[in-house]
Image (cartoon, rainbow, N blue to C red):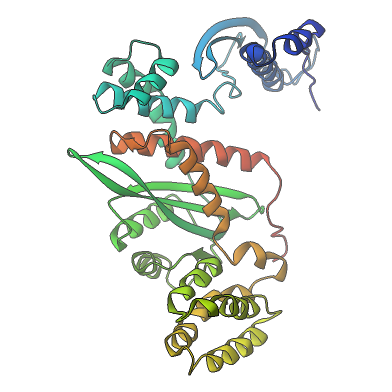
Length: 387
């Protein structure tokens, strides 16, 4: 049964939006979120408004005001209540976690005296003029348990596993260091993308990757058929230690970039790139191997180092040919996770230098958690049935 909300935007609200434009945005946000929360309560109750049904779980019990600080200023929402049981609308929380995490990171910088004039202005706008360490601690106490629970939630069968890392500047023991943010993304048995976990380390050495991968296994990760990542010594050692025997696909995009370092003359770059694409775009593995043999021989004399590199490295980008043809385009590179990393970078750029490791992990966890929720409710990414 589908339950329709009994709340729609009145004509006068639409007229106000037309007249005031962006100045009316806070009120529009309030109306939309209130509408979503009322619909969520109806789904929780199991009946439409004023409907009698044995499926009813509870009864509505009015609303309770709650004021939340957003980029549009303070907005007071009407939180739907029920008479019994525990109900809290997730519509209010989704989309606000990463904003709260960002605000907290900036506030921590402000409190610790490491902020710039620009950061001070942003904090004042987002948090108000009074920002204390007690306020930051209280906010963290509310958000951190939720994010930690998400990072430790049970996993299950993941058919394809993508791994990548990015770097963020973090203040550690009085120094600013580049810390590695390790991220795991997967495609589950239903064909939907999932964000599996995130961890922070001092780099991409084998010990950090191995610890991270082992934590995924401890949470129930299983069923992996293929792993996709860029080439990195620490990551490859960790994959062999934790997932030995599972096929690995080296990102074709990065392979093509790596090849440029072995091209002796700039005027050869386009030709070499076209030859490598011909191998990667072959219809099947035997054809790809034949094309590879041809280009290895082609560059033996004019670019011997390139020829040797191709022979030893390009086969690592051909593992994908052992998998269904309709899956290959989305398995041949790590681009999906690369795009996500760019979005994370867009959000973390505001902070610039995180005041501590916890602030960095908090913001990135919140971003990933929101994206994971969006993917779960979105369309199927790959059709896995009967594979």
